[in-house]
Image (tube, rainbow, N blue to C red):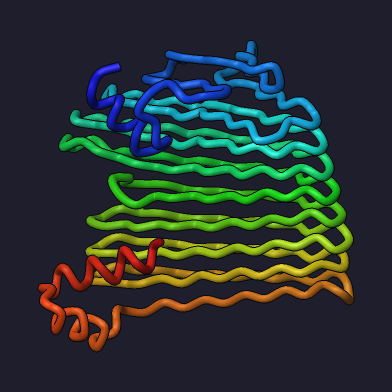
Length: 305
């Protein structure tokens, strides 16, 4: 890999060298590195681009890295990755996509990640998006995540997009079984004329299932953000959706919640707040020696942590 690709890999997966455990590294449309373990297998799909990841029941304290990096301007791809996670597992999965575009053509990565999580399993899934390059070509990422949570399983999902992505549509669909728990944390910042749309569709079908969705976002300059969340309570369950956003300059933000209870004991809550940075916060930091720009940056960084 060249230096640009190494930088992308560090930004989206935190990798400075070959990781321990299982991994599949994809660069410019092809696999450039792969390793499996006794408990985690990675199989190339034969009918379309993508891989099947099979994690054996009882797998504990293992990790899987599956980053995608693109440094070739004008490259577009669609990838399908399926995760089959057995019962009684405890694993961490690090994904993410980084695009460097120094040309005039659009570079685009679309991907569908489907998770089939067995009973009584705990999965932590981290997905980071990052863009760089001084070309006029756009950097576009459209990830879709489909989740099926088995009985008493738990998925922690963290999605991060802080800079460099011109256009993104992020879609997450989840179905929860009995006692299943889903926690999603989204952190997002847009600037320039960037556009980011986030869609969440969560069906709580199981008895005592629960979901907690938290979104923190900052929109600067002329960028646009759309947040749409749908919570469907089909059984005795609890769900909470929270969207907090800071708006700056000429940006625009929309938050559209929808909660539907189809059961007497479905408890569904949605909260949304959009506003600018309070003037007194900036003044307070400026009294400590920061410039106005430094004060704004400090507030934004703290908000997105």
